[in-house]
Length: 456
Image 1 (cartoon, helix red, strand yellow):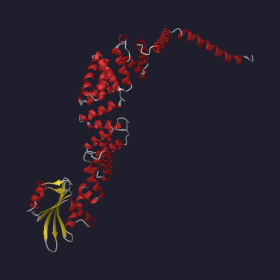
Image 2 (cartoon, rainbow, N blue to C red; image 1 turned 180 degrees about the vertical axis):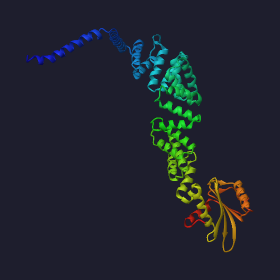
Image 3 (cartoon, rainbow, N blue to C red; image 1 turned 90 degrees about the horizontal axis):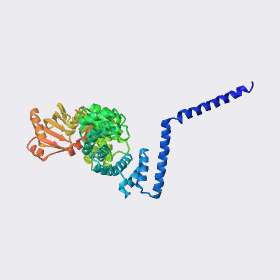
């Protein structure tokens, strides 16, 4: 009786093994489908071994090459299959045992899957000459034309392929992308929307969808997608740039700066895109009156391409502004700060005189008019000042407008001040009139004096 408890577990294990053996014999070994599968596997291995023996004797045996190439192709071993199809396409003299079309199509598919698009294109070009209406050829040629940048040709081929197999996902995908790239945004939009339902994680489709929305005027919807894509390694730089452009266009400069700052931190982007992002960042910072940061980004552009757009001129202008706070206030400050500076400048023009402001006005932040009464020990006049906020050339029309304002206010004389220069025509216009033109060089002298003066 004492040994029975010890034998019981061993008996249970033995019974279990017997049951498993019976099940394996009845249901596994006797399963017709599994038997057929095992037989097929043994037959395939035998065929492959036979093909390998034949190739050992003749490395260019077409029948053996076809057998091995098909096996690798079915197993999606693209590199191995491609090497064999290359031999079949170019190195076999007996062409009677080679299906030229099949070889070129499969060679093209292997190269396409491996990202060797030029070789894939060559293979499918041969296949296209043999069967131009075949779906495989139309689809792959269309996809390759898209990747080569021939978008109109891609649309033509992919449209034909889609007519043959309307539900083929990859055809619909490449057709949607080709429509987008060829500028057919209205056609592309519903097509991309439909395929995105099947491929929601496809970032290229998502970017194309947002770009279509932006080009069709639906900027807010586009912006939400571009913002979502900003951190994507591949599409992030372009998404940041597009989001930044939209926000710049909507005068949302802080948001544009955020978009573009994220963008320039991406690595490995196209150099031209990086230059344009740095340039746009500088523009955004200029709008925000952050001159130091604007100059930093302009210099980043200059280091890569000294002649990019108007970077040289902008650096000359804003580099000087960065060094001269009063000039920066004159050109860029808010209207109240600009007017305060103008009131100080009026005093600087007439040191020691009694100056009283009679009237002040500002026109769209372009210029300010100050009508003043100036009294010295020797004379007393009413003087109209116009402070023009530009570093460019002020022409005759602007000076004529100032002259009209001078007559309207009945001032005794006028002083027109600019941070730029005056045209020859403007100078000739004031020769016989009581108007003085003060250009940048003289203005800089007055700006150096104002820090010690109080505004009137």
